Length: 74
Image 1 (cartoon, rainbow, N blue to C red):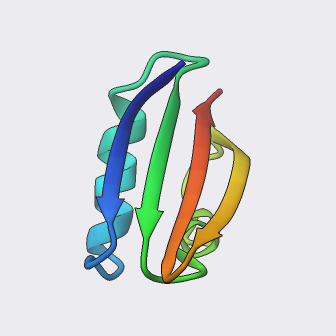
Image 2 (image 1 turned 180 degrees about the vertical axis):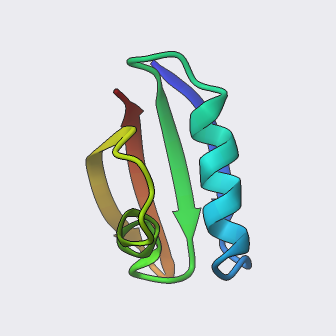
Image 3 (image 1 turned 90 degrees about the vertical axis):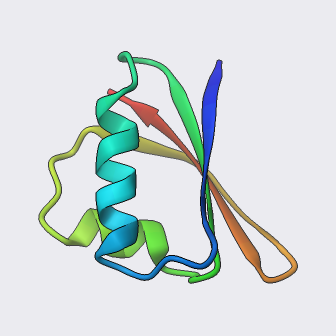
């Protein structure tokens, strides 16, 4: 069940990380969030920035210049 879409296409870290942190915090365990980004490593950067392992990356795709990620809160 997709809970929401977070559009980070024009947001650079660390602002993007804060937005993902806030969005994940608002989810219930098992809920999904779609993240749209213009940076190909947005979710990888988020995960490597010493963030708690609160999500599973379920899907990663590219739609032209937009990178789409689907995360599930664990």
